[in-house]
Length: 461
Image (cartoon, rainbow, N blue to C red; front, side, top):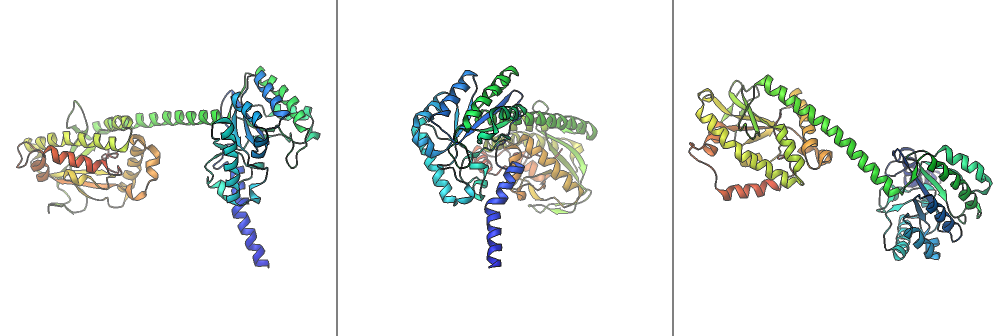
Protein backbone atom coordinates (compact mmCIF):
# COMPACT_ATOMS: atom_id res chain seq x y z
CA UNK A 1 0.00 0.00 0.00
CA UNK A 2 2.82 2.36 0.91
CA UNK A 3 4.56 1.62 -2.40
CA UNK A 4 1.33 2.25 -4.31
CA UNK A 5 0.83 5.61 -2.59
CA UNK A 6 4.43 6.51 -3.33
CA UNK A 7 3.97 5.72 -7.01
CA UNK A 8 0.75 7.73 -7.11
CA UNK A 9 2.65 10.65 -5.60
CA UNK A 10 5.39 10.36 -8.23
CA UNK A 11 2.90 10.12 -11.08
CA UNK A 12 0.79 13.05 -9.88
CA UNK A 13 3.92 15.17 -9.42
CA UNK A 14 5.13 14.35 -12.92
CA UNK A 15 1.68 14.86 -14.47
CA UNK A 16 0.62 18.02 -12.67
CA UNK A 17 2.74 19.51 -9.93
CA UNK A 18 6.12 19.79 -11.68
CA UNK A 19 4.76 21.24 -14.99
CA UNK A 20 2.66 23.73 -13.00
CA UNK A 21 5.62 24.75 -10.88
CA UNK A 22 7.90 25.28 -13.89
CA UNK A 23 5.36 27.35 -15.80
CA UNK A 24 4.34 29.52 -12.84
CA UNK A 25 7.84 30.18 -11.47
CA UNK A 26 9.95 30.20 -14.63
CA UNK A 27 7.34 31.06 -17.25
CA UNK A 28 8.46 28.16 -19.44
CA UNK A 29 6.27 27.79 -22.55
CA UNK A 30 3.73 30.32 -21.34
CA UNK A 31 3.28 34.07 -21.78
CA UNK A 32 3.00 36.04 -18.55
CA UNK A 33 4.04 39.64 -19.19
CA UNK A 34 5.36 42.05 -21.77
CA UNK A 35 8.09 44.66 -21.82
CA UNK A 36 6.36 47.55 -23.60
CA UNK A 37 6.81 51.14 -22.47
CA UNK A 38 3.20 52.35 -22.70
CA UNK A 39 1.09 49.19 -22.95
CA UNK A 40 -0.45 46.77 -20.50
CA UNK A 41 -3.02 43.98 -20.95
CA UNK A 42 -6.42 43.57 -19.30
CA UNK A 43 -7.58 39.94 -19.37
CA UNK A 44 -10.95 38.63 -18.15
CA UNK A 45 -11.75 35.05 -17.18
CA UNK A 46 -14.91 32.98 -16.66
CA UNK A 47 -17.30 34.91 -18.92
CA UNK A 48 -19.28 35.75 -20.81
CA UNK A 49 -21.87 36.95 -18.33
CA UNK A 50 -25.15 38.36 -19.71
CA UNK A 51 -25.23 41.13 -17.07
CA UNK A 52 -21.65 42.16 -16.33
CA UNK A 53 -19.82 41.52 -19.64
CA UNK A 54 -21.88 44.07 -21.64
CA UNK A 55 -21.26 46.65 -18.87
CA UNK A 56 -17.56 45.89 -19.07
CA UNK A 57 -17.56 46.27 -22.85
CA UNK A 58 -19.23 49.68 -22.54
CA UNK A 59 -16.57 50.74 -20.02
CA UNK A 60 -13.72 49.62 -22.26
CA UNK A 61 -15.26 51.39 -25.24
CA UNK A 62 -15.60 54.61 -23.26
CA UNK A 63 -11.87 54.65 -22.50
CA UNK A 64 -10.84 53.22 -25.90
CA UNK A 65 -9.13 50.18 -24.36
CA UNK A 66 -8.83 46.66 -25.78
CA UNK A 67 -8.84 43.47 -23.72
CA UNK A 68 -8.64 39.69 -23.94
CA UNK A 69 -11.52 37.48 -22.81
CA UNK A 70 -10.86 33.85 -21.88
CA UNK A 71 -14.31 32.33 -22.21
CA UNK A 72 -15.79 29.30 -20.48
CA UNK A 73 -17.31 27.27 -23.31
CA UNK A 74 -20.59 26.46 -21.55
CA UNK A 75 -21.13 30.16 -20.80
CA UNK A 76 -20.30 31.12 -24.40
CA UNK A 77 -22.75 28.48 -25.63
CA UNK A 78 -25.51 30.00 -23.47
CA UNK A 79 -24.79 33.62 -24.45
CA UNK A 80 -23.64 33.74 -28.09
CA UNK A 81 -24.90 37.32 -28.46
CA UNK A 82 -22.38 38.50 -25.82
CA UNK A 83 -19.59 36.54 -27.53
CA UNK A 84 -20.49 38.24 -30.79
CA UNK A 85 -20.40 41.66 -29.12
CA UNK A 86 -16.94 40.98 -27.65
CA UNK A 87 -15.65 40.04 -31.10
CA UNK A 88 -17.32 42.87 -33.00
CA UNK A 89 -15.91 45.48 -30.61
CA UNK A 90 -12.37 44.38 -31.42
CA UNK A 91 -11.38 42.39 -28.36
CA UNK A 92 -9.50 39.10 -28.42
CA UNK A 93 -11.21 35.85 -27.45
CA UNK A 94 -9.39 32.89 -25.92
CA UNK A 95 -10.41 29.59 -24.33
CA UNK A 96 -10.87 28.87 -20.60
CA UNK A 97 -12.11 25.22 -20.97
CA UNK A 98 -15.70 24.22 -21.61
CA UNK A 99 -16.36 23.97 -17.87
CA UNK A 100 -14.36 25.69 -15.16
CA UNK A 101 -12.47 22.65 -13.91
CA UNK A 102 -8.79 22.17 -13.10
CA UNK A 103 -6.69 20.34 -15.68
CA UNK A 104 -5.11 18.41 -12.81
CA UNK A 105 -8.45 16.67 -12.33
CA UNK A 106 -8.99 15.74 -15.97
CA UNK A 107 -7.42 13.28 -18.35
CA UNK A 108 -5.54 14.73 -21.35
CA UNK A 109 -8.27 13.43 -23.66
CA UNK A 110 -10.93 15.23 -21.62
CA UNK A 111 -8.99 18.50 -21.74
CA UNK A 112 -8.60 18.19 -25.52
CA UNK A 113 -12.33 17.53 -25.92
CA UNK A 114 -13.15 20.61 -23.82
CA UNK A 115 -10.82 22.75 -25.89
CA UNK A 116 -12.24 21.45 -29.16
CA UNK A 117 -15.83 21.99 -28.04
CA UNK A 118 -15.16 25.54 -26.88
CA UNK A 119 -13.16 26.26 -30.03
CA UNK A 120 -16.10 25.22 -32.19
CA UNK A 121 -18.56 27.32 -30.16
CA UNK A 122 -16.42 30.45 -30.56
CA UNK A 123 -15.82 29.74 -34.27
CA UNK A 124 -19.53 29.28 -34.98
CA UNK A 125 -20.26 32.73 -33.47
CA UNK A 126 -17.25 34.76 -34.66
CA UNK A 127 -15.97 32.91 -37.72
CA UNK A 128 -12.46 32.85 -36.20
CA UNK A 129 -10.60 30.08 -34.40
CA UNK A 130 -9.13 31.04 -31.02
CA UNK A 131 -5.38 30.49 -30.65
CA UNK A 132 -4.85 31.40 -26.98
CA UNK A 133 -5.69 29.36 -23.91
CA UNK A 134 -5.72 30.04 -20.18
CA UNK A 135 -6.35 26.91 -18.09
CA UNK A 136 -8.58 27.49 -15.03
CA UNK A 137 -6.53 28.78 -12.09
CA UNK A 138 -3.53 28.76 -14.41
CA UNK A 139 -2.98 25.09 -13.64
CA UNK A 140 -1.41 23.01 -16.41
CA UNK A 141 -0.77 19.29 -16.68
CA UNK A 142 2.05 17.49 -18.47
CA UNK A 143 0.28 17.54 -21.83
CA UNK A 144 -0.47 21.26 -21.68
CA UNK A 145 3.15 21.81 -20.71
CA UNK A 146 4.29 19.83 -23.75
CA UNK A 147 2.24 22.08 -26.07
CA UNK A 148 0.07 19.11 -26.93
CA UNK A 149 -3.04 21.27 -27.32
CA UNK A 150 -1.69 23.50 -30.07
CA UNK A 151 -2.80 26.70 -28.28
CA UNK A 152 -0.53 29.36 -26.83
CA UNK A 153 -0.93 29.34 -23.04
CA UNK A 154 -1.33 32.76 -21.42
CA UNK A 155 -1.05 33.27 -17.67
CA UNK A 156 -0.70 36.65 -15.89
CA UNK A 157 1.70 38.87 -13.98
CA UNK A 158 -0.87 40.41 -11.60
CA UNK A 159 -4.02 39.11 -9.91
CA UNK A 160 -6.16 40.88 -7.32
CA UNK A 161 -8.72 38.55 -5.72
CA UNK A 162 -11.55 40.32 -7.52
CA UNK A 163 -13.70 37.15 -7.53
CA UNK A 164 -14.48 37.73 -3.82
CA UNK A 165 -17.08 40.33 -2.84
CA UNK A 166 -15.43 41.01 0.51
CA UNK A 167 -12.39 42.52 -1.21
CA UNK A 168 -14.45 45.63 -1.95
CA UNK A 169 -14.02 48.11 -4.76
CA UNK A 170 -11.70 50.51 -2.85
CA UNK A 171 -9.20 47.84 -1.82
CA UNK A 172 -9.39 46.30 -5.27
CA UNK A 173 -8.71 49.65 -6.95
CA UNK A 174 -5.64 50.23 -4.74
CA UNK A 175 -4.27 46.79 -5.60
CA UNK A 176 -4.78 47.35 -9.30
CA UNK A 177 -3.28 50.85 -9.29
CA UNK A 178 -0.12 49.49 -7.65
CA UNK A 179 0.25 47.13 -10.59
CA UNK A 180 -0.68 49.62 -13.28
CA UNK A 181 2.62 49.48 -15.15
CA UNK A 182 3.72 48.88 -18.74
CA UNK A 183 3.97 45.20 -19.62
CA UNK A 184 1.65 43.95 -16.89
CA UNK A 185 -0.88 41.25 -17.74
CA UNK A 186 -3.77 41.79 -15.32
CA UNK A 187 -6.13 38.97 -14.39
CA UNK A 188 -9.76 39.96 -13.68
CA UNK A 189 -13.15 38.23 -13.80
CA UNK A 190 -16.34 39.39 -15.50
CA UNK A 191 -18.44 36.51 -14.17
CA UNK A 192 -19.00 35.28 -10.59
CA UNK A 193 -20.83 32.01 -11.16
CA UNK A 194 -17.83 29.65 -11.11
CA UNK A 195 -16.76 27.60 -8.08
CA UNK A 196 -15.17 29.78 -5.39
CA UNK A 197 -16.45 33.07 -6.80
CA UNK A 198 -19.21 35.36 -5.51
CA UNK A 199 -22.03 36.12 -7.97
CA UNK A 200 -21.95 39.88 -7.30
CA UNK A 201 -18.14 40.22 -7.23
CA UNK A 202 -17.95 41.73 -10.78
CA UNK A 203 -19.79 44.82 -9.44
CA UNK A 204 -16.72 45.77 -7.40
CA UNK A 205 -14.44 44.90 -10.31
CA UNK A 206 -16.25 47.32 -12.63
CA UNK A 207 -16.12 50.16 -10.09
CA UNK A 208 -12.42 49.61 -9.44
CA UNK A 209 -11.58 49.18 -13.13
CA UNK A 210 -13.07 52.57 -14.00
CA UNK A 211 -10.69 54.25 -11.52
CA UNK A 212 -7.80 52.32 -13.03
CA UNK A 213 -8.74 53.27 -16.59
CA UNK A 214 -8.97 56.94 -15.62
CA UNK A 215 -5.47 56.75 -14.14
CA UNK A 216 -4.17 54.85 -17.16
CA UNK A 217 -5.51 57.57 -19.43
CA UNK A 218 -3.86 60.22 -17.29
CA UNK A 219 -0.50 58.38 -17.53
CA UNK A 220 -0.94 57.81 -21.26
CA UNK A 221 -1.02 54.04 -20.74
CA UNK A 222 -3.03 51.81 -23.08
CA UNK A 223 -4.59 48.38 -22.57
CA UNK A 224 -3.97 46.16 -25.59
CA UNK A 225 -4.89 42.64 -26.65
CA UNK A 226 -2.62 39.75 -25.72
CA UNK A 227 -1.86 38.93 -29.36
CA UNK A 228 -0.82 42.55 -29.94
CA UNK A 229 1.45 42.42 -26.92
CA UNK A 230 3.02 39.12 -28.00
CA UNK A 231 3.62 40.40 -31.54
CA UNK A 232 5.24 43.54 -30.13
CA UNK A 233 7.52 41.33 -28.02
CA UNK A 234 8.55 39.36 -31.09
CA UNK A 235 9.38 42.53 -33.03
CA UNK A 236 11.36 43.88 -30.10
CA UNK A 237 13.34 40.64 -29.78
CA UNK A 238 13.99 40.63 -33.51
CA UNK A 239 15.21 44.24 -33.37
CA UNK A 240 17.55 43.40 -30.49
CA UNK A 241 18.85 40.40 -32.40
CA UNK A 242 19.41 42.55 -35.48
CA UNK A 243 21.44 45.07 -33.48
CA UNK A 244 23.53 42.29 -31.98
CA UNK A 245 23.96 40.71 -35.38
CA UNK A 246 25.13 43.99 -36.90
CA UNK A 247 27.65 44.37 -34.11
CA UNK A 248 28.95 40.85 -34.67
CA UNK A 249 29.18 41.44 -38.43
CA UNK A 250 31.01 44.75 -37.95
CA UNK A 251 33.57 43.21 -35.63
CA UNK A 252 33.87 40.22 -37.90
CA UNK A 253 34.58 42.33 -41.01
CA UNK A 254 37.02 44.52 -39.08
CA UNK A 255 38.89 41.40 -38.00
CA UNK A 256 39.00 40.23 -41.63
CA UNK A 257 40.67 43.49 -42.73
CA UNK A 258 43.26 43.17 -39.98
CA UNK A 259 43.80 39.50 -40.85
CA UNK A 260 44.34 40.29 -44.54
CA UNK A 261 46.95 42.94 -43.71
CA UNK A 262 48.77 40.85 -41.10
CA UNK A 263 48.96 37.71 -43.23
CA UNK A 264 49.16 39.41 -46.65
CA UNK A 265 46.28 37.57 -48.29
CA UNK A 266 45.81 37.90 -52.02
CA UNK A 267 42.41 38.02 -53.71
CA UNK A 268 41.56 35.81 -56.68
CA UNK A 269 39.11 38.32 -58.23
CA UNK A 270 39.61 41.78 -56.66
CA UNK A 271 36.65 43.36 -58.49
CA UNK A 272 34.25 40.77 -57.06
CA UNK A 273 36.11 39.11 -54.17
CA UNK A 274 35.12 35.65 -53.03
CA UNK A 275 38.30 33.58 -52.56
CA UNK A 276 41.41 34.87 -50.81
CA UNK A 277 44.61 32.88 -50.41
CA UNK A 278 48.19 32.94 -49.14
CA UNK A 279 51.14 30.56 -49.61
CA UNK A 280 52.10 28.77 -46.40
CA UNK A 281 54.11 25.76 -45.31
CA UNK A 282 51.82 22.87 -44.36
CA UNK A 283 52.31 21.91 -40.68
CA UNK A 284 49.76 19.13 -40.23
CA UNK A 285 50.00 15.37 -40.29
CA UNK A 286 50.72 13.53 -43.53
CA UNK A 287 47.59 13.14 -45.65
CA UNK A 288 47.08 10.89 -48.64
CA UNK A 289 44.55 12.49 -50.96
CA UNK A 290 42.09 10.76 -53.28
CA UNK A 291 44.48 10.71 -56.27
CA UNK A 292 47.31 9.25 -54.19
CA UNK A 293 49.13 12.57 -53.68
CA UNK A 294 50.75 12.81 -50.24
CA UNK A 295 50.68 16.12 -48.41
CA UNK A 296 53.45 16.17 -45.81
CA UNK A 297 54.70 18.60 -43.19
CA UNK A 298 56.77 21.35 -44.85
CA UNK A 299 55.02 21.10 -48.26
CA UNK A 300 54.01 24.42 -49.80
CA UNK A 301 50.26 24.96 -50.13
CA UNK A 302 47.84 27.79 -50.83
CA UNK A 303 45.62 28.40 -47.79
CA UNK A 304 42.09 29.40 -48.90
CA UNK A 305 39.70 31.84 -47.22
CA UNK A 306 36.22 32.92 -48.24
CA UNK A 307 35.47 36.65 -48.32
CA UNK A 308 33.38 37.27 -45.20
CA UNK A 309 31.64 40.35 -46.59
CA UNK A 310 30.56 38.43 -49.68
CA UNK A 311 29.41 35.52 -47.51
CA UNK A 312 27.27 37.80 -45.39
CA UNK A 313 25.78 39.52 -48.45
CA UNK A 314 24.87 36.19 -50.07
CA UNK A 315 23.47 34.79 -46.82
CA UNK A 316 21.38 37.86 -45.97
CA UNK A 317 19.84 37.95 -49.45
CA UNK A 318 19.10 34.23 -49.66
CA UNK A 319 15.57 33.26 -48.67
CA UNK A 320 16.36 29.55 -48.41
CA UNK A 321 19.20 27.08 -48.02
CA UNK A 322 18.92 26.05 -51.67
CA UNK A 323 19.27 29.63 -52.86
CA UNK A 324 22.31 30.10 -50.63
CA UNK A 325 23.86 26.85 -51.90
CA UNK A 326 23.47 27.82 -55.56
CA UNK A 327 25.03 31.26 -54.95
CA UNK A 328 28.02 29.65 -53.24
CA UNK A 329 28.44 27.08 -56.02
CA UNK A 330 28.46 29.79 -58.69
CA UNK A 331 31.04 31.82 -56.77
CA UNK A 332 33.34 28.79 -56.48
CA UNK A 333 32.91 27.93 -60.15
CA UNK A 334 33.88 31.49 -61.06
CA UNK A 335 37.01 31.75 -58.89
CA UNK A 336 38.59 28.29 -59.12
CA UNK A 337 39.52 28.61 -62.85
CA UNK A 338 41.11 32.01 -62.19
CA UNK A 339 43.05 30.62 -59.25
CA UNK A 340 44.19 27.65 -61.35
CA UNK A 341 45.55 29.98 -64.04
CA UNK A 342 47.36 32.07 -61.43
CA UNK A 343 49.07 28.96 -60.01
CA UNK A 344 49.97 27.73 -63.49
CA UNK A 345 51.42 31.04 -64.67
CA UNK A 346 53.32 32.39 -61.64
CA UNK A 347 56.87 31.14 -61.15
CA UNK A 348 56.69 31.67 -57.35
CA UNK A 349 53.99 29.02 -57.20
CA UNK A 350 56.01 26.29 -58.94
CA UNK A 351 56.49 24.44 -55.64
CA UNK A 352 52.84 24.64 -54.55
CA UNK A 353 51.60 21.13 -53.90
CA UNK A 354 47.93 21.89 -53.42
CA UNK A 355 45.11 23.95 -51.91
CA UNK A 356 44.29 23.82 -48.21
CA UNK A 357 41.46 25.19 -46.06
CA UNK A 358 39.27 24.60 -43.01
CA UNK A 359 35.47 24.47 -43.13
CA UNK A 360 32.47 22.71 -41.65
CA UNK A 361 31.59 21.08 -44.95
CA UNK A 362 30.50 17.51 -44.37
CA UNK A 363 29.93 16.52 -47.98
CA UNK A 364 29.73 18.26 -51.33
CA UNK A 365 33.25 19.77 -51.79
CA UNK A 366 34.31 16.49 -53.41
CA UNK A 367 32.30 17.64 -56.42
CA UNK A 368 34.87 20.39 -56.92
CA UNK A 369 37.81 17.99 -56.58
CA UNK A 370 38.55 18.54 -52.88
CA UNK A 371 39.67 15.82 -50.50
CA UNK A 372 37.78 16.10 -47.19
CA UNK A 373 38.77 14.75 -43.78
CA UNK A 374 38.19 15.52 -40.11
CA UNK A 375 40.29 18.20 -38.49
CA UNK A 376 42.59 16.64 -35.85
CA UNK A 377 41.46 17.41 -32.30
CA UNK A 378 43.34 20.16 -30.48
CA UNK A 379 43.40 23.88 -29.77
CA UNK A 380 43.16 24.83 -33.44
CA UNK A 381 40.17 22.55 -33.98
CA UNK A 382 38.40 23.99 -30.93
CA UNK A 383 38.98 27.61 -31.96
CA UNK A 384 37.96 26.84 -35.56
CA UNK A 385 34.76 25.23 -34.32
CA UNK A 386 33.81 28.34 -32.29
CA UNK A 387 34.63 30.73 -35.11
CA UNK A 388 32.78 28.77 -37.78
CA UNK A 389 29.68 28.42 -35.60
CA UNK A 390 29.58 32.20 -35.23
CA UNK A 391 30.00 32.54 -38.97
CA UNK A 392 27.19 30.07 -39.64
CA UNK A 393 24.76 31.75 -37.23
CA UNK A 394 25.35 35.11 -38.93
CA UNK A 395 25.19 34.21 -42.62
CA UNK A 396 22.81 31.25 -42.69
CA UNK A 397 19.12 31.94 -43.54
CA UNK A 398 18.07 29.91 -40.47
CA UNK A 399 20.52 31.74 -38.21
CA UNK A 400 20.96 30.25 -34.74
CA UNK A 401 18.42 27.48 -35.37
CA UNK A 402 20.81 25.86 -37.87
CA UNK A 403 23.26 25.23 -35.02
CA UNK A 404 20.75 22.91 -33.33
CA UNK A 405 20.12 20.58 -36.26
CA UNK A 406 22.81 18.04 -35.50
CA UNK A 407 26.24 18.27 -33.96
CA UNK A 408 27.64 15.79 -36.48
CA UNK A 409 27.21 18.42 -39.20
CA UNK A 410 28.97 21.11 -37.21
CA UNK A 411 32.51 19.73 -36.99
CA UNK A 412 35.42 21.50 -38.74
CA UNK A 413 36.82 19.69 -41.77
CA UNK A 414 40.09 19.88 -43.68
CA UNK A 415 39.76 20.57 -47.41
CA UNK A 416 42.67 19.75 -49.69
CA UNK A 417 43.12 19.61 -53.45
CA UNK A 418 46.31 18.48 -55.24
CA UNK A 419 47.68 21.17 -57.51
CA UNK A 420 47.50 18.81 -60.50
CA UNK A 421 43.77 18.35 -59.94
CA UNK A 422 43.30 22.12 -59.73
CA UNK A 423 45.21 22.77 -62.98
CA UNK A 424 43.87 19.82 -64.97
CA UNK A 425 40.31 20.49 -63.93
CA UNK A 426 40.09 24.27 -64.02
CA UNK A 427 43.04 25.94 -65.81
CA UNK A 428 42.64 27.02 -69.42
CA UNK A 429 46.05 25.55 -70.28
CA UNK A 430 45.51 22.36 -68.29
CA UNK A 431 45.03 18.93 -69.80
CA UNK A 432 41.31 19.31 -69.06
CA UNK A 433 39.52 22.62 -69.39
CA UNK A 434 36.18 23.61 -67.93
CA UNK A 435 33.51 21.06 -67.36
CA UNK A 436 30.48 20.97 -69.60
CA UNK A 437 27.32 22.93 -68.67
CA UNK A 438 25.51 19.61 -68.12
CA UNK A 439 28.06 18.60 -65.52
CA UNK A 440 27.72 21.96 -63.79
CA UNK A 441 23.93 21.77 -63.84
CA UNK A 442 23.94 18.28 -62.33
CA UNK A 443 26.39 19.43 -59.67
CA UNK A 444 24.23 22.42 -58.76
CA UNK A 445 21.24 20.12 -58.36
CA UNK A 446 23.17 17.68 -56.18
CA UNK A 447 24.71 20.35 -53.94
CA UNK A 448 21.51 22.34 -53.56
CA UNK A 449 20.00 19.28 -51.88
CA UNK A 450 22.69 19.26 -49.18
CA UNK A 451 21.87 20.20 -45.58
CA UNK A 452 24.11 23.23 -46.18
CA UNK A 453 26.89 22.19 -43.96
CA UNK A 454 28.87 23.22 -46.99
CA UNK A 455 27.52 26.23 -48.78
CA UNK A 456 26.83 28.22 -45.65
CA UNK A 457 30.21 27.71 -44.08
CA UNK A 458 33.01 28.84 -46.27
CA UNK A 459 36.62 28.58 -45.22
CA UNK A 460 38.11 29.97 -42.08
CA UNK A 461 39.51 33.46 -41.77
